[in-house]
Amino acid sequence: MWILGHRGASKAAPENTLAAFALAMAQQAHGIEIDTYQVDGKIVVIHDRWLNRTTNGDGMVTSHSLDYLRSLDAGHGERIPLMHEVFDTLPHDALLNIEIKHLSHIESWIADVKTGLRISGFPQQNLIISSFNHRWLRSIKHAWPEVKIGALTATYPENGLGFADDLSAYSLHMALDVVDEGYVTEAKQAGLKVLVYTVDHPQDMKMLKSWDVDGIFTNVPDIAREVLA
Image 1: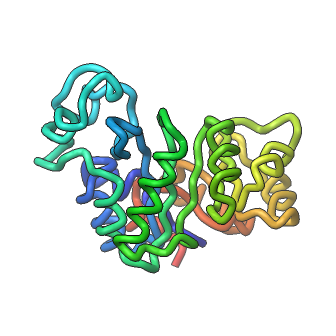
Image 2 (image 1 turned 45 degrees about the vertical axis):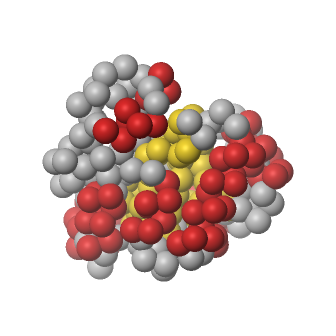
């Protein structure tokens, strides 16, 4: 079962920073999940719309320049990373789930990601793109058919797996609070990988393993490694 560091090893290091990503890899995670915003035509890695929880800045992420965002302390002296820095940090056998929180121009977003892949050599097949904004995902898949799409949901959809099918998804990313064994089985029979977030308790990890879930997003990759060994 894949162990993906949720915002990196975010229990032990500042979330969504290069330090958290490197620590997740040191803790033998199979990969990481990150959150991104498009600012000044570049992709920055941060979760919240507002800066005050995870940095020493104020205001909304999208109301500031890239230079200002890069000047902030994101915890323990870490900076808000750029997308290409994440590609450079990860080993090429790692999985990377990019969750899109904000984008303003899909074509330039795709071009930026492709450039990062090409320069770093990080393999495209290890990349999964997800978002709660399924319109963005549909547009990205249309413009970039080869990319893997993660159908992200925090609810139990009324139309079952219909929304994942509409997105030509590779994987189903579902909240722990609403996932159940029957839905996991149905998704896997439909050819989808099933990943569940956010899983930090050992009993939940064992339950999901018994359901044959393909992967979990966790803030504690080291504990997950120990429990799932």
